[in-house]
Image (cartoon, rainbow, N blue to C red):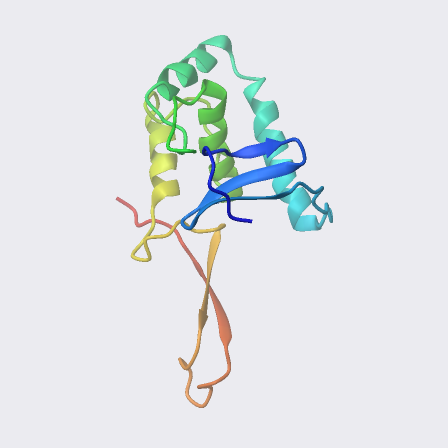
Length: 164
């Protein structure tokens, strides 16, 4: 239901408020299904492992992450954003690396050349201008093979950055 009211975001009593390009809207809150699929559990395990890894860092490493995070802003919500905490910056970098099967880093990219190379590899987008979803990039194509003009095919290719 579209609403003309003071901008809100999140849950308030039994309503959930959100905004999109057409304006603000709300709907009755509900408890989403939790199917516990293998892929869902794998994603949660990566997040749990990276979160547990933060607790194994030394105090000096944590301070480095906190200092580096001061210059990083959160994603805007209701046209507001703020600095990330050290923990959130650590999670942002290392969860993305773990999802792609790359080695995690103990120091922020600003403090370590190895971490900077890992993050540059993470941000490599090739010429599609889109981050890879995982270690492999999947493309769907029609009509690339002779005689298969109307049969969709799926191809896989590694999305690694060039050396250099």
